[in-house]
Amino acid sequence: MSARKRTIDAFFGGPSSKKAKPSAINLPTGATSNGQTTQAVHGSDEGRKEINAQIGFSEHDSYPFPIAHLPQHIKAELSSLPSSLERVINDQPDLDLVYYEPYIPRSSAKDLFYHLRSSLPFYRVEYDIQRGGFSTHIRTPRWTTVFGVDDTSHFASSLTSPEGSLSETSLLEDPGDQADSTASKIVVDAKTLKPVDVAKEKLYSGYTHPRPIPKCLDDLRISTQRAAGCTFNFCLVNYYASGADSISYHSDDERFLGPLPAIASFSLGARRDFMMKHKPPPKAGAGKDEQANNDAKPIKLPLGSGDMILMRGTTQANWLHSIPKRSGKNEADGGRINITFRRAMVKGGTDNYYRYNVGTGPVYTWDEVNQEMRPWKKDI
Ligand SMILES: O=C(O)CCC(=O)C(=O)O
Ligand SMILES: [Fe+2]
Image 1 (tube, protein in one colour):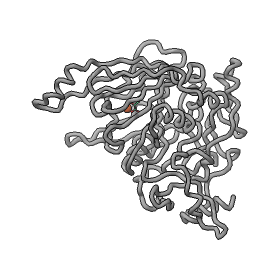
Image 2 (image 1 turned 90 degrees about the horizontal axis):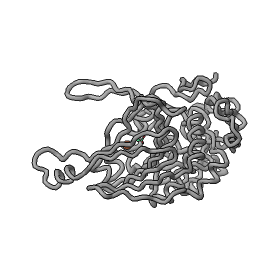
Image 3 (image 1 turned 90 degrees about the vertical axis):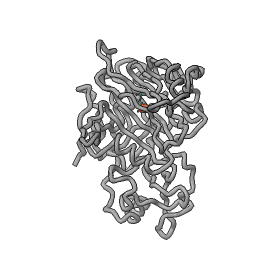
Image 4 (image 1 turned 45 degrees about the horizontal axis):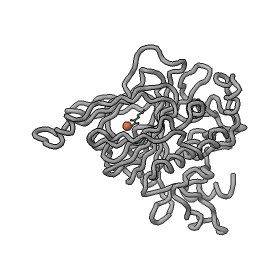
């Protein structure tokens, strides 16, 4: 165990780290300890062989297992993205979308889809909601995972001073850089730069410790920030295993995202319809709201692999969106990954995102042999 590691544990008074080097860890199917990804299923053609060229892992105590970096050919391509011109869609009341069709070229998007599916930890979150005096049990109809922390904190490297205490200077770094040498990152208060003892202060309701965005997603976040002209501190990932998985009509207008949130949303894998409709006017004589609602026509965007939609301005406040279930024949591999980048301003955002996208249930990983999510078991 390194001196650096010992010092973090001593600081939080916890037991010595349970985390071992990748070689001693039960990696998800498809990943191996030498940083290569096995390609039993999708490694047959020449182009895909490149996906094996992994260059390491992001590690962190909050991850169940190390998360592989991007294959070199995808990483190399990110600096030249987006690969298409942006198309602004704002011809309807309160709507402000930017559509990149695609943002990531189709063949790299496919590789990115396979890479993320076999590298990330996923969850099938269940929770109860109280409605009209009744409790309803919800099982999220898709796989989810999330990384990031809100603006009140950020991840910083914890280097030690010669005396063995945490060095303040080591915490002064770009708050946007969540991925560099992830293993040593701790959560620090954005104002004081003092370490936040997440567990002790129960800041995040005990669902989980906030997780730094792993490099494979952070590389895409940095590209997306450049294109969107704003910053993001959260990355949510949905995996729709088949047409039976979905997300119902909702808007991401949570207060913790601020009044005019910008959300960048990527599609990878199978094509699925992204449906939008204007929110109904508030009840009784809404005047202008009613007119906007009457004038607005529903939208269907059949999002393909690599496409990105930036929803911004008044969109979330006034429009709902969904990915409906679909029946009929799927493409060869009917799976689809959606990645959204968002910026949460307050602790309530962190709490909410981990609660509904990680929860307290088991970790699942992609099983290449059986081509399905399977519960992940830690090697003892
Ligand atoms: O999968 C998608 O394209 C949409 C996901 C979404 O709306 C969300 O996660 O809030
Ligand atoms: Fe959404």
